[in-house]
Length: 312
Image (cartoon, rainbow, N blue to C red; front, side):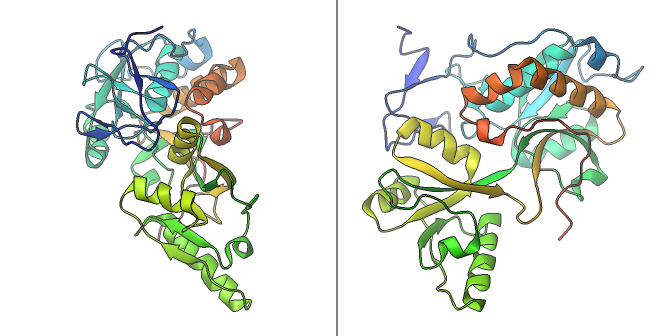
């Protein structure tokens, strides 16, 4: 049995505040927040990927792959128990890439607003933190995809709702969504489509407090929650009180993907794409996503600079 200082047990319905950042909800399940991350999946060198690193490319730190990440929410990343080491799915993915390229991983915790400048200035080589590929971002960044950008509908375990896959399925339901979010705009468009068909619109509810949101679902005051699937999937696995009834692209109706971001024209993206594809083939990639309950967002192939979400 691991010591409490190494493994953190988080009570259902509670929200952990760790070093100023929100952690994850959990129930009867241990979340490894030790900085050593002994259960992290590691990989062997991939010579084919290493050969794609451009001759003369200058890493931020020689011999290391310096990667920015944004500690804030699991399953993406939070600080470990030492309050300085980022742990989560995004650091795990960064580790697979670094291992594949024969480099030591150097994680740099940053605020979300700071990573574009850090890439442009060469402070770090890549960003691995839930960055969606967009056509606007592609003007300054190269991308190597590693996860689907999904939104998910979640309901209480005892809900009679079994599937939500199209606008008609939310007609007349009470749906919780975050204000001023992409998913709110999608839900509003679904309401417009339903009204045009003579169907009832969904009643949209907003909650600032995740605990109140959960209580609304469990009590029946709300029928479903629509939000980023990655966070909801992790919380569902920890709390065991909600279940997934439908996913769709975060750019609906356009497909959206999450990718490792590198400086435009640096040439590093092809090597990273090859590294990810090697780990998809080896099975390490699947194990990494499964560790954080993100299997539903797995891609079958990494791509360099695929079509991104269009400019608004």
